[in-house]
Image 1 (cartoon, rainbow, N blue to C red):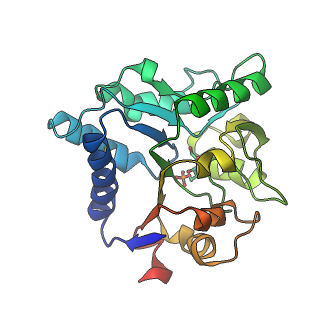
Image 2 (image 1 turned 135 degrees about the vertical axis):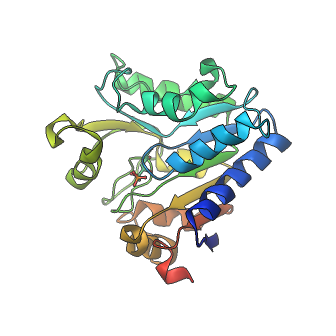
Length: 242
Ligand code: F6R
């Protein structure tokens, strides 16, 4: 793993954006795996900015998002489809047909998981998978437990994850109870992984995930087995890595 601690928000965002734009420039038909949540918001704003300045084009890129809530209408302000459209897709030169987010409203969710995996299998592997990490070590919505699931699947969200995400909703009751997520094997198949970790409240889980035992109790620890991972920590999250 290549682990870097950046000492300013600007350096953190600039480094992440630099890695993505370098890939997209050298491989215009790159396949990007994308994440939502608060962590990549600054990165997406920087990519939009760089696109507006003519520094990067996403016209040939295809994207695959990690996850989506189950049962939240696609147009809901907190659906991950809306998040991606608003934070990135609408503002760059990518056609929405080239962007993929699991459909959390599919009539048959099991079929939807199979469809998503088949699509990744046929079109993959993803060149670069962007990840954040939950306070409990989840990646995508692969939650801690006594096992991990390889492929895309429906997952009941841990109470702590619903509580963490309640900040985006009017109340905890509105946070969906389930999500569709890419599985651990799907994530591990990507050629490169870019894991972003921000905030002092993530310092401890960063230490566990990056230097602790590899265990399903901390799904992100599995990334230690991947041959090509770049981890960017901001000053707060990087307390143990200076
Ligand atoms: C989002 C995702 C999640 C988040 C994680 C951290 O697509 O897959 O694993 O990366 O919950 O969320 P934030 O960045 O809001 O702390």
